[in-house]
Amino acid sequence: MELIAVCDSKTNTAPDFPMGWWSLARSHELQVGEVKAVSALDRDLVLYRTRSGAVRVHDAYCPHLGANLGINGRVVGESIQCPFHGWQFGADGACQHIPYCEDIPARAKVNNWPTSEVNGEIYMWFHPTGEAPMWEVPVIEQLQDASWTAPRQVEFTIPTHIQDIAENSCDPEHFQYVHKQNETPPSSVTVEDDGAVHLHADMNANGIPGHLHATMFQPGLARVQTSYGPGAEMIVYNSAQPITQNETLLRWTLTVCKDIEDLAGDAVMNGIIDGLQDDYPIWKHKVHRKQPIFCKGDETLVLFRKWVRRFYLETSPRGQQ
Ligand code: FES
Ligand SMILES: [Fe+2]
Image (cartoon, rainbow, N blue to C red):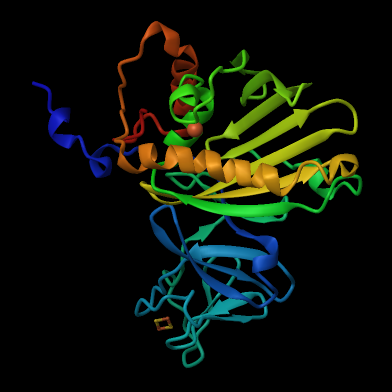
C-alpha cells in the first residue's frame, strides 16, 4: 500500500538538514563582546564574539534552569554568562564558573558547534551526529583582492528547504517557464573530482560573449564566476542559513573587477532578487518530492539528486533524498 500519499505536505516530506557549513551572520554584524540569538537548523542558538575576537556558537538554552543565553547573555572574557544566575560557559560549552558555588556539575554544558570565519561571514558546521568538520569553507580570494570592488551584499528569505533551492541551479528547463527566458543557453553540469557540482555556460550580454562558471561546493554554498574577458569578471557568492526545514535565508555577495565597477553593480544584485522573486511562488507552495518521477530530459536533476545524497546519513529516517 502506498503510504506516502497521506504525507503529501511540506512538513512531512521535507528532508533533514544536509551536513555542511551554514552561514549565520556577516562578520561586521558581530562586534567584540556582542551576543546574538540566532535561529538555524530548527534550533535556537547563541552566537557571540569573545574579547579576543573568537566566534562561538552554542545551543541557546542554559542547562541550569533553561534561560536563553542569546537574550541578555553577556560576554565575560572568553566565556558567555547566563543572564539568569550567572553561570559561565567557555569554548567547548562546558560550565567554567558558578558565582555562588565551588562545585561545577560535570553535566553542566551547552552543546558547542564548530565555527569558521572567512569571506566576511560567520559559519557553523552541522553534522547530524556531531562529527567534526569534514571540509573547509571555500575561500573566495577575490573578496580580499584590492583589484576587486568592496563587496555588495543582499539577503533574501525563501519559504522552502535548502536542498530544493540548491536543486534550482541544476534545473535548466524551469528558466523558460518561471524566469521567462526564451532560450536556455547551452550548459554542461558535472560533478568533478573536487566533489563540487560545476556548471559551465556560454552567454551573451548585449552582444558581448561571455562565460559563466558556477561551482556548488555543498547545498547552500556556491560561487558564480562570469567572465567577459580579462579585467571584465564578476563573482557572485551565495551562502545559506537554513532556519527551519521550510525557511532559508540566503546571503549574496557580489564583487567585480574594478575595471568594470561602473558597469556591473546594483543591476546584478537587483537581477538576482528579481530571479528569486520569480521562483518564490513555486517554492512557497510546492512540496518536496523525495522520489520524483523524472523523464529522460531531466539528466541534470538526476545528477543533482545523486550528488546531494552524500550530505545526508544513510541511516537517517528521512536522510535518503
Ligand atoms: S538558568 Fe542559566 S544560570 Fe540559571
Ligand atoms: Fe529559478
